[in-house]
Amino acid sequence: MRVAIAAPVDLPRLARLLDRSAEQTTPAGLGGPGTATLVAELVSRGHDVTLVTLSREIGRPVHRRIGTVDVLIGPYRPRHRARDVFRQERDVVRTLLDSVDIDVVHAHWTYEFALGALAGRHPTLVTVRDWAPAILRHQPDAYRMVRLSMQYRCLAKARHLTAVSPYIADRLRRWCRGTTTVVPNGLPTAAFRHEPPRVQQPVRRLLSVNSAFSKGKNTATLLRAFPAIRDQLGDVELTLIGSGHGPGGRAERWARSHGLADGVVFAGFMSAEQVLAVMDTADVFVAPTLEESFGMTVLEAMARGLPVVAGRSSGAVPWLLDLGRAGELVDVRRPKPISQGVLRLARNADLRAQLSQQALARARLFAWPNVVPAYEAQYEQVAQSASALRVPPGRTV
Picture 1: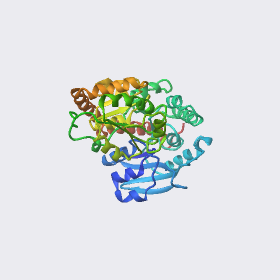
Picture 2 (picture 1 turned 60 degrees about the vertical axis):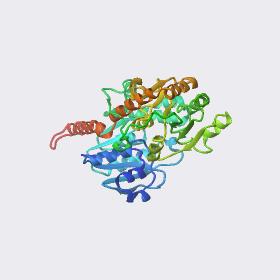
Picture 3 (picture 1 turned 90 degrees about the horizontal axis):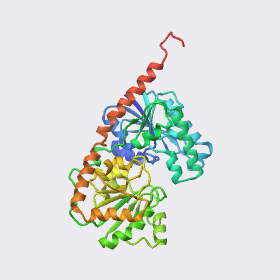
Picture 4 (picture 1 turned 180 degrees about the vertical axis):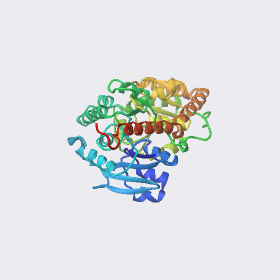
């Protein structure tokens, strides 16, 4: 099938997956968890894939070829996008999609990519990957208000939707007619450990990966919990990965101002491959996030067989962790339950081994080869629905 993916993508990562010779000449793209590996999986299954994406590094649309994938890249303004509700970005997505002959568009998120696709000429499947009201609640500002309005507009226009988790699907039922199919995010098979990790050694290395130092990501509460963990376990180390968590970044400045930086490694942003490598050196993964539409970093930790401590009310995370059968669920709103959850695992090697095995088994359900067939069924359905609506030659309506 001829499929166009309209989404933010880590383009250098896509090049590493499909054509390393293109990595040095490809703009950075906008990131986007899982979209590069989804494109690679679709290619491996024989689909003719076109990618429409955006980048801050260009001033006008460009065309690249990465492996067998045609990549159409439009400009993404570094500032003032929200002033016109991302009109320029929406327009370039629509124009690029209208320039290609495809069977279906698969647009990700409910903002400029989905709105641009829905304004174009091709049948479109929209995957809802976050929930704007929840984001606004944790980050109340004008920018998130604009994003909220974009999501509502998208949901009013879209006729074919998937959600990445039951958590998102439940919220969509309040706003959308008809049913929403849950198709979760996926991981490539290369992201999974081939052997169970060793969990009998003492817990000495904790790891947390968060995309920002913010109220919703809740790293501050983890930092408040860490001294109690050190008091009990001694020479234990907490590594923080992600934007805002690097040397001199917001997380470190906050931690030092509160006397909470001892034993903490502020590693900052890393590539997806680097994150997986660090996970293999960790003993316990801690996800302090207050609300997640899915929880990609949690899934990646599960795929490496790491015992996980995460929030029992953190959106889709309890579902991802099989309601506690594949991870330790605690109240992450307060430091004490986080420290208690980590200490419970640290003191019980058998529990760590059990959760490690359960996490790895659960994560395998989300491997792309198990997920993509559900998307392929949606593509067929969307394309057939569009074909049924077309008027045959010689007929009028």
